[in-house]
Amino acid sequence: MVEGTELFEIIHTTRAMRRLKPDPVPDALIKRILEAGQCAPNGANAQLWRFLIVKDRAIKQAVQVWYQRAFDKVIGPHYRSSAPPPGMDRERYQRQAAAVQYLTEHFHEAPVWIVACLEHGTQPPNRWSGASIYPAVQNMLLAARALGLGATLTTRHLVYEKETEAALGLPPGVHSYAIIPIGYPVGKFGPIRRGPLSTIVYKDRWGQTWEGD
Ligand SMILES: Cc1cc2nc3c(=O)[nH]c(=O)nc-3n(C[C@H](O)[C@H](O)[C@H](O)COP(=O)(O)O)c2cc1C
Image (tube, rainbow, N blue to C red; front, side, top):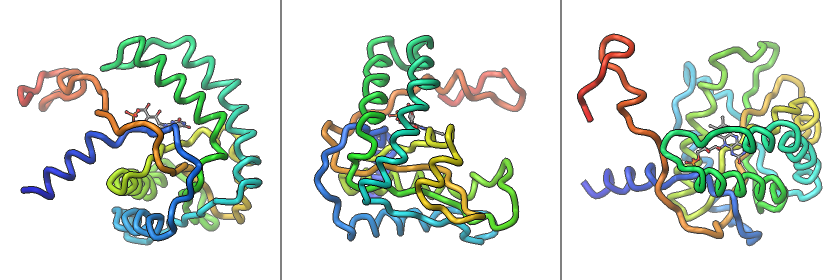
């Protein structure tokens, strides 16, 4: 089936695209991305998701300051001291680290952000809150890819949650779960690198090999 093949092609090439051109992204494309997000499953179909589109450079810059600080204090040292993850050699991991640093320094230059939020009201966020927003985030990443746009799921601003949510002007009862910087990509959409299924899938009992691959 042609459409099915396209979907799997999209899934297998939707990687974090951190180097973006400053060229503006038409609202018509952002609308299609948001519509894809809205198709996602969400608890009881309550649709408590809210999406803040940010193009205002001053707002993005105010958030970037905290995003950079979290890199300097937490993420940068982690990349310098950690081993490559499954499916990646050291060189690729270093390239990823360089791209992460690049996005950190240019976060505010992405032409548009989608800030994915949930309206909790007086209910405090709990462990399954994210399950009602991250499927929408993933749908939006796939939709951006399908439209030829680069995007990355980022959550690092949450290291300084209070400060960044104040900079974003979120009202009480609304919490952010991801910032997705979107723009036309500088590089090409490449294949996703992951470890083998055999190291993460078990059959019936934990630790028992699954013969499916
Ligand atoms: C919960 C979560 C938070 C993430 N936060 C960030 C982030 O703040 N900055 C960033 O550059 N990438 C972020 N990423 C992207 C991951 O680094 C990326 O998905 C991972 O390295 C795999 O890369 P790939 O999708 O290109 O294969 C995040 C991903 C997830 C799932």
